[in-house]
Length: 353
Ligand code: EPU
Image (cartoon, rainbow, N blue to C red):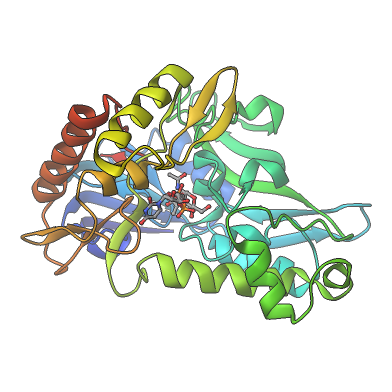
C-alpha cells in the first residue's frame, strides 16, 4: 500500500488536468482495502474518490480529499468451465485483459480492444464500442461494500446496466468499490461485425469474405482491426489529452428525432439523412458527433482546448496546458449550440469531479 500526501494528479487523468488531491492511496489487495475502511480511513482527508485509469474523468478543480486507486491485478481463468469464466482484478488495464483473451483464442472482449481505462471502472461505466458493451461479457462483479465492510457479489442482472449506466453510478454511487470482475468468454466463434464498416475492414484484413471469413476469423484478428480503427478515429491517449467521448449519444423520442430531420433539411436539403438508431419503445439514439459537427464545432480550437477533428464527440487538451475552466466553458458552448439549433439536450459522458 502507498499513501502520498498532496499528490499531483496530472498523470492520473487522461485529460491531463493539472490538479492535486490532498492524498492518494494505492492499495494492492482486498485485504488492504478492508483494513483502510476498518480503521475508519485513519486520518485520511475526506471525501473519498475511487478512480481507475482516470480516462473518463474531468477534474474541475483540486480535489480536497483522498483519491483511492486499486492495484489489484490478476487474471484468473477457469479453463474447466464450458464457457471460459475469468476473474480479473479491478486494477488490470482493461486492454491487457482484451489482449489476454485474444491470445487465448477466447471470444467476447475483442470489440472492446484499445479502450483506455481499467477493469473496475469498465464495469462501473459499462464501456462499449462497435456493437458490444462490457455488460455483454460480464458474469458477476465483486465489490467491497463501504457501508457494511463486507465483500458482496452482483450478478450481471443485479448491476442494472444500461447505456453507460449501472447501479454503481446511480443510487449506490460511492458505496460499492469494485474489486474484481468475472467475465464469461466464448470458446466458439461469436464475432460481432455489424457496426459501421467493421465487417468490411475485417474482411480486408483476413483477405476473404462471406462463409470463408468464419473459417479464418480469430479474436486476435478482430482485435487488430478494432485497434487500428480506434487509432485512426480517436486521439492517441499518450499524445493528446482527452477523456474519450465527452458526451453521451442522446436517446430521444421519435418526435424529437423528426424535429432534428426538419431542421437539418433547412440547411442540408430535402435528401439529407440524419443518422439515428432505433433504441426501442419509440426512442431513437442520435450520434452526438453528428449534432456537434452540424453546429460547426468539428476541429474547433480555442486557447488550449478543442474539438477533435476526426471525432467531434471528443474534446481535447490541444496544448497539454488546458485548464478545467476552459474545458467546461467549451462544453457549455457546445451544449447550448446543440440545444439552440436542434432542441436536443446533450449530457456529458465524462464524470465531473
Ligand atoms: N459522426 C459524425 N461525424 C464524425 C464522426 C461521427 O457525424 O466526425 C456520426 C456518424 O453518423 C457516425 C456516428 O456519428 O456514423 C457514430 O460515430 P462512431 O461510430 O464514431 O461512434 P459514436 O457514437 O460517436 C460511440 C462511443 C465510442 C465508441 C464508438 C464506436 C459513446 C458516447 N461513444 O461513439 O466510445 O468508440 O461508439 O463504437 O457512446 C467512449 O465512450 O469514450 C468512446 C470513444
